[in-house]
Structure formats: structure tokens, C-alpha cells
Image 1 (cartoon, rainbow, N blue to C red):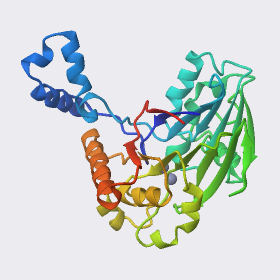
Image 2 (image 1 turned 30 degrees about the horizontal axis):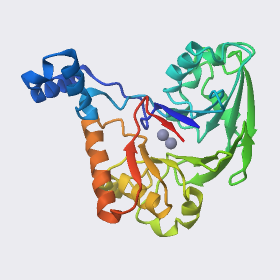
Image 3 (image 1 turned 90 degrees about the vertical axis):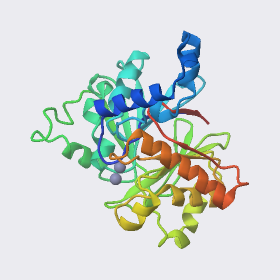
Image 4 (image 1 turned 180 degrees about the vertical axis):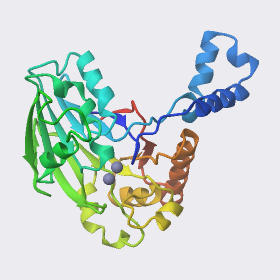
Length: 320
Ligand SMILES: [Zn+2]
Ligand SMILES: [Zn+2]
């Protein structure tokens, strides 16, 4: 299974500003020595060794992930339809996919704006004869998607998007087979409700998406059923919107911190934890710092545990 991240922000899309780009250039130049800029090769080497926040950006689009399975990655699954869905749609077309007569499957965790807003900008949904299947543990997900496209809010209604649209209800904790993957959902604490998703391949490898989920010190003792759900995952994408300090202040806001995510990943014997749903107010250097803090925390609480921790960015691709 190939997993590619197209949108990693929480709450609202947040474009990088020109001030931030200028600050990156300044900081990079201050680090350079004359030897670093002598040749194209030395420049390339210098850039490769810069911190991620100086040479790139985590990205400003909201939640959207692509999963691809099959020998030629021909089965396409999409998790959530945040603003990252727009570039994904264009990329699918440039790959010769979804040009008409093609099919893909969406899994929707919940219907907050930052998880559905990209749907109207997903070019393949306007192409006749494409078949788009929506899977969700919310039985009324069709109604919710229609509601975001009433004429007062958007010029094109849901029915005017030409592709065939089908809806499939996945009852919580019941396994479903979708194009060779086993899928299971589990409700998590979040205002209005949300479901985490577990995908298992025929070879037993598993990928879990758990965003928009509040786990905190109050609930940490009651997480046995979640430990079972996450157990042994090859990759766990987890809501780490807040710093630990913020998570203590923002009880019931529906999100978690990297420290709690790390504790849960270690308890569940997860192999790789991916920090996700970055706060829209955090710039790239703060996100670098939070990743470093998470790594330090992990070393402090379980140095010998092989858990790997990374932070999601637009374009991150994982092979599971
Ligand atoms: Zn969200
Ligand atoms: Zn949400």
C-alpha cells in the first residue's frame, strides 16, 4: 500500500506568507559558508542538510490522504476531502486516471469543513461515467455532503457534479472488504463525532488514520479498547494538533498532543507514528520544534522502544 499526504493541516487551510518565505531565505543564507555555494553540487549538498522548515514547508492544505493498492497501485482510496483534494484530483488526471469510466473510493471520518471542503474542487467528480464511492460510519453522510452545496453556499449543487456517486455505510467495528483491503472504523472523542480508520492488507500489514481525536490525561486510563484497535499498526497517523501545554487548556476541543500520541503508540506497539492535523497558527519552524520535542519525549519515556516518529507534510509518501 502506498500512502501519500495531500493535506496535513487542521481546522482551516493556511497558506504560507511572503514574510515566512523571506525569513527562510534569510536563515538559510546566514547558515551558508563560501564553500557551500561554490558549485551546483555544493549548493545541492547544502540544501539537503538544511532543517526541513528552511528548505520546504509542511503545507497549508487541510486533511486529504491517498492510498493506492494493487500491483500498479491501480486501486485508489482517498481519506477525507479537505482542501488537499484539489491538487490530488488534478494529479490523478495527469496520471491518466479518473478521466471517465474510472472508479475510486472515499473514506470520510466526519463532516467538519476541513475534511469535506475540497470535494467541490475535485475535478474528477465533474466527469461523466466516473464512479465515486463514499464510505462512512455516519449513515447520513450523503445528506451532509449535499448540505454543503446548497445554492446559497456554492454555485454547483451536489447533483450537478456529473460523476456517479454511491454511498456505503460501515457500521462501527464491523469489517468491510473494499478492493482487497479490510477496513474497520472506531468512534473517537471529538465534537460532533468522528471515526478512526484501520486498513489491513492481505499480508497483515496495517495503516491507521486517527485524526480529530481527543485523548488526554483524563481519559488515558480508559483507552484499552483503543490500544486493541491500534495494536501492532505499521503506521499510525495521529492527531497532534496541540502542544502538551495547550492540550491541558483545551479540554473538549477535540484534539490531542504529540506526548499523548507517543504514549498511545508505545502502548499499542505501533512501528511508525505520523504527527498530523497541524494547527493553522503553527509555522514551519514551530512544527520542526514540535517534531524534535516529540522525539525527545519518546527517548525520555521509552528509549529502547523501536517506535519511529515523523511529522506529516504535503508530498510525504510511505510504502507499507
Ligand atoms: Zn479537522
Ligand atoms: Zn473535526
